[in-house]
Image 1: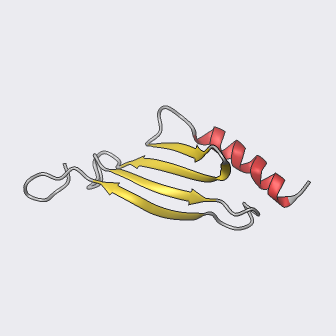
Image 2: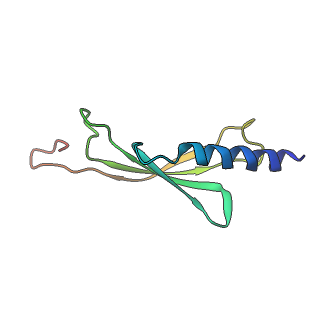
Amino acid sequence: MSIEKKAMQRIEKEFKDMTSKDSLYSIGRDSNNLFKWNAMIQGPEGTPYAGGMFSIDIKFPKNYPFTAPKVMSTKIQLNLNLSGSCM
């Protein structure tokens, strides 16, 4: 079995493991490319990030897990009050 095929199987398993209704994040993936994901992460309660939504793009290499995925923050949405602190 090729390294790329093994990577695809591993990514598929991890995607299934990470999709939960109770998590602080939601994950989607490119329907044409299993190696590209997008995740939305909620800021945890009780932290300055509470109420914020953080979008990241994840690109897995063809030889994953032997090489780490590339992660890039694409969008940050915070709810600020008039004093400038997070709500």
